[in-house]
Every structure is written in structure tokens, then in C-alpha cells.
Length: 190
Length: 199
Image (cartoon, rainbow over all chains, first blue to last red; front, side):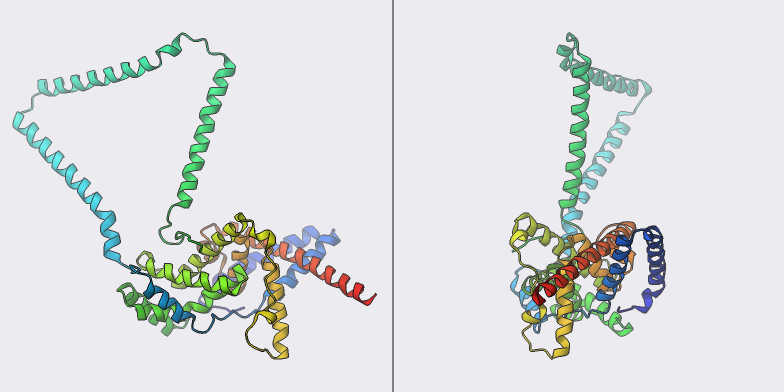
């Protein structure tokens, strides 16, 4: 095994844990000869894999890699371009929000706000929300006349839960398939 | 890596980030064997391994700016390699190629160079190892290769394979058990064939 001195302390800890693992496994399997034979084989596997040399890359491999890099157009570690692409929209949104806020503050200041004006504005906002809620309630009005059986209700709840689970799974799947930022780069098999 | 190599590696990384292809070439030369070995142990085929190793370096170069300089470069490269190989093996299975795929070729037959007799034993050992590795799932195979060949701690393997330390412990434990069972089976079969030949 090729040991890295910087890693030695951590490796020792790992080895101790592994040793405990094996001892526990041995104790558990002492009564069973067939399993005991497997443990002996496990140690043989360790010995087999131990000190197997690392294969060397074929001669001229590095040169071929560099030729491939040179051959692929636009393959450059371009830091500025990547960062600008992600930063610009945020900068634009932040600037727009700042302008709106400043404009709103100036308008309110110019109008000379009084308690009555602010109260009126609040009243109108609450009124708008009420209208919106009433329109939403109207959508469910046809259902009010139906007598929903418990079975249907359970099925509906089940469907909602299933949809939720499916959505959650889809989001998880999408998260794993998205282009990984650092360690998991998109795969293209030729 | 020695202290000098680490310093050189850092300097090359900075130069490569600035667009210096020659510096990246030095990084390729420094890590080519580690990347190639991992690809070969995962895929069990020299042509595919070279392709995978090359793809690893291409991706590393294209995404060099995303690399965190605080972490070892080799770990990053191995991570790209293992993920690429795992995906490639999965796709291979999806395409049902695995059903018709022959066992990894015998190293002694596959080598281009003539080897002395002593090396034949190593070649046979290598071939047995590749046959055993081929029976593990891609995730287990990656953990085993990183454990035996790269002196990686559980934490490092977990970081490379983007999982938890306990998952790695469990994978290694089960992988060793599987390898042991398979090895027992192979020994029994070879003993049976010897007896059959004698009779």
C-alpha cells in the first residue's frame, strides 16, 4: 500500500475502526464455519489487492490530451465570462429594485404623507385582497353542493400525497441531473 | 506528492487558470497515471480507459475555474474520473451491453510488450483482480479502487464519491465480502476443472 505520511494519523483511525469491525464480525461468525471461511477469504482479498502497482498511462498520453485540448475550439478556463454571465442579471435586478424603492420614497415624501392618506391606501389594499379571495372561493362553489363520500375523500388525499411525493422525487432527480458545479460534470459518452 | 511537487502544482494551476496550456500539460503529466489507473480499474478496458482519462483532463481544463484551490487537485481529478466512469458503466448496463460483454481481457495477452516470466504472475494477478472488480457495482468498485490503490481515507473517498463516510464504510465492507465470496467460487471452479482434467 502506498502510504502518504500526511494522511497517516487519519489512516490509523480508519484502520482501528476497520479492525474493530472485523473483530466484531469474527465474534459474530465464530459459530458458523461457512461464514468463517468467507472471513478468511476477505483477508485473502485484502492480501491480493495489497501492493498491486498502479498502471501507467500509455506512452504519449499527455501529448494526446494536449492535442485534444488544442483541437477543441472554445475550450478555455474563462473565469471572467462565466462569472459575468451569472452576476449580470442579479446586478440588473438589484439596480431596478433600488430605483423603484428610491422612486417610491421620493413620491411618498413629495405627497406629504398623512395618517389619513396612509389609512386610505391600506384600506384599498385590504379591499383588493378581499376581492381576490372572493374570486378564488367562487372557483370552489360547484363543489359545495356535492356530498363527498369518505372513500373519495381518502382517494383525493392519497392523490395529493402521491403527487407531492412524485414532485419531490422529480425535484431530487432534476437536482442530481443538473450540471454539477465542481465534482459532477456533464457526461457525454461517445 | 513532495513539497516541491505541491509548490509546482500550485504554480501550474495558477498559470493554467490564466490560460497557459503548457502549465496544464505539466499537470496532466503529473497526474496521468493516477487518472488512467482509476479509469482502467473501473472500466477494465485499455481503449475505454484512455478515452475516459482524456475526457477527465478535458473537463478539468474546461472547468478549471470552478476548482477550489483549497482542496487537493488530485482529489478533484479522481472525483471527475470516478463519476465519469460510474456514469459510463451505468449507460453500458442500460444499453444491455453488459450481457454480451466478455470478461476483462487477460493482462498478459493484452499487453503490447513481451514480459519476462516473473511478470506473468503479476499479470495473472492483475487479470484476477480485474475479473473480481468487474463483478462489483460501479459505486462499490470506485470505493474499492480508491481504497486499495490511492491510500485514500474513508473521508477522502466519501468526498470524491460525494457521499457520507458511513456509506463508504458500508460499501467497502460489503464489497470485500462480495469479492471474497466470488474468489471462493472461482477457486472452487478452478479446482473442479483441474480434477476434471486429471480424470
